[in-house]
Image 1: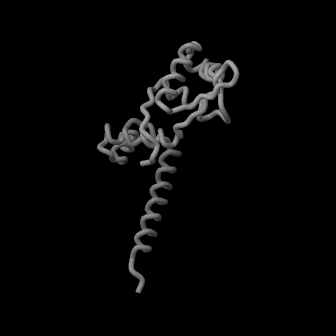
Image 2 (image 1 turned 90 degrees about the vertical axis):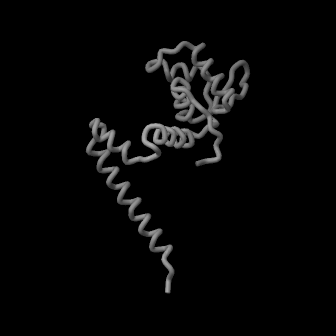
Image 3 (image 1 turned 135 degrees about the vertical axis):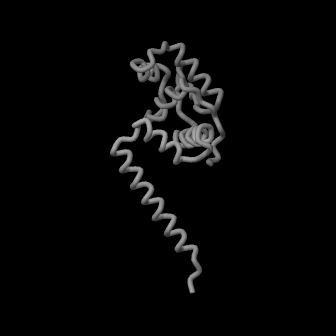
Length: 140
């Protein structure tokens, strides 16, 4: 895994993080409220509480700008997704990906596009492994 420290983020906090990850730069609390207004219907106080929790956890940083604070994500989204994915695989499928994909297939959660992309990914991974195996063979 990466050297990013493990930071546990709740479902509610993840909505706030998504806003910060998508933002092109630092944002104020009011911008987060507006971004989440349709999907979450949270009051400004709720968003500020979530921002403070994330700040204490070290997932975000805040810089004073006059009478307000500008917030930016410190925790990279990819690091969070990798850790959450690994946690899900370990908890539910013993660390194995195939049972997860089988479960999704049984529930009709895989579209034809998903299946095509999975085939392409598997072919690419297979090609990479073959190339690595060939490179590891001694050359006489």
